Image 1: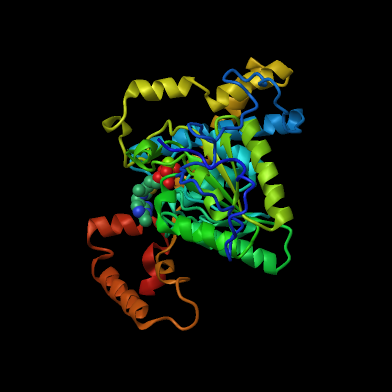
Image 2: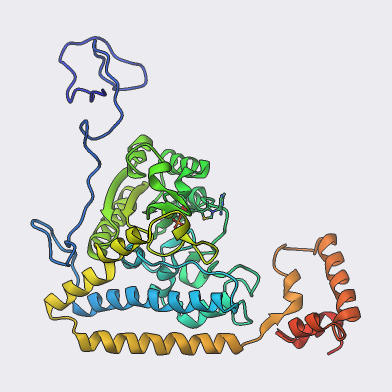
Length: 426
Ligand SMILES: Cc1ncc(C[n+]2csc(CCOP(=O)(O)OP(=O)(O)O)c2C)c(N)n1
Ligand SMILES: [Mg+2]
C-alpha cells in the first residue's frame, strides 16, 4: 500500500539538498498522488444534475441576455452537428466530427476567453469560432470546401477551420502538435507584451502524445501566458480513458510540471465558465501556464468514420445522454430564473434550424474555387520545381481527358472556371 508524504517533515534537521527545498526525512515512503491517499483530485461544479445551484457554490457573474446567449450557442452546436452528420451520410461532404456531450465545455470555455485570445484547438472546438461570430455560412463553406471557404480555400478536410480574424489557428490532424505550438504562441504574446493569452484545447487522448509533455514543460520553464484546456470526454476513438492512463486523469500531471491546475465538471456550463475565467485571469496575471481538465462524456461517435457501438454499450450512451446532460441542465437553470420558457425553446429551435438549413443550401450550390488554387499558398517566394511540374502534368491531363471522360467532366463542372484557369481555354 502507498503512503502519502508526511504533511510536515519532522522538525529534526537532517541536512539540506543543493538544488531543492525537499525536507530530508529518515523514513522511506513512496507516493503516487498530490491528494491524500485514496482520494482523487476534486471536480468543481456549481449546478447539480437538474440545474439547481449546489450548496455553497458561487455562480459566475452573468445576466439574462448573457445566459441566453450561452444557451443559444450551446443549442447551435447540435443543430449544426445533426445537419453536417446527415449530409456526410448522403455523400455531400466527406467527414464530420460532432460536439455532442461537450457543448458546455466548448461554449463555457469560449465565453470565458477574450475575443483576441489566440486559440489553438484540436478539432472539436467549432463552438469557439461560432461564439466569436465566424458564422454558419463559413462553417458550411469550409466543410463543403467551396470557393467561399476562408479557412483553406477548399484544400482541407472538413472541420479543419482556421481564421486569423477570429484568432483561431488552423486545425491540423496530427494529434497534439498544437500543444507545444501554444507554448510558443504564449511566449510570443509575452514578448510582445500583449494582454491576450494563448488558449490550447486538446483531448485526453492527445495528452498521451510526447508533444503534450514537451508543451507543458516548455510552458512551465519558459513562463508564458498559455492556458491548457483538456477536454476529457472519456474516449480516444475506441480507447476508453481507463485504458489511456493509470494516474488521476490529466489534471494530476499539471503539478508535475509546476502548473496551477483545476478540474471542472465539463457538463456544467457555469462551472466551466467560472473555472476558465479564473484560469485565464491567473494565466494572464502570473504570465504562467495554467491547466484546466474538463470532465465530460463523448455522446456522439468519434467521427463519421466511426461506429462507437462496436466498442461501447448503447445503454451506457443512452444513460449518459440523460445524466448531467449539459443542455438540459442549463435549460432547467434558465427556466428557474424565469429567463427561458417552452415558447423560447420552440422559437430558438425553429430559428436555428432555418439558419442552418439556409446556409447548407447556399454552400451546397456554391462552386469550388479555381482548380489552380491547388498549387498556391503552400510555399512562399519562388514556386518549387516539383509544384511547377505537377501543375504542368495536371494541365496536360485536363487537356486530354477534361472534355471527353465523364468522371472528369463531372468533377470539373464543380469548379469555378471548370479548370480553364489551368488549361488557358477560358
Ligand atoms: C499523431 C496522431 N495519432 C493518431 C491519430 C488518429 N486519431 C485521430 S483522433 C484520435 C483520438 C483522439 O482522442 P482525444 O484526444 O481524446 O480527442 P477526442 O476525439 O476525444 O475529442 C486519434 C487516435 C492522429 N490524428 N494523430
Ligand atoms: Mg477524448
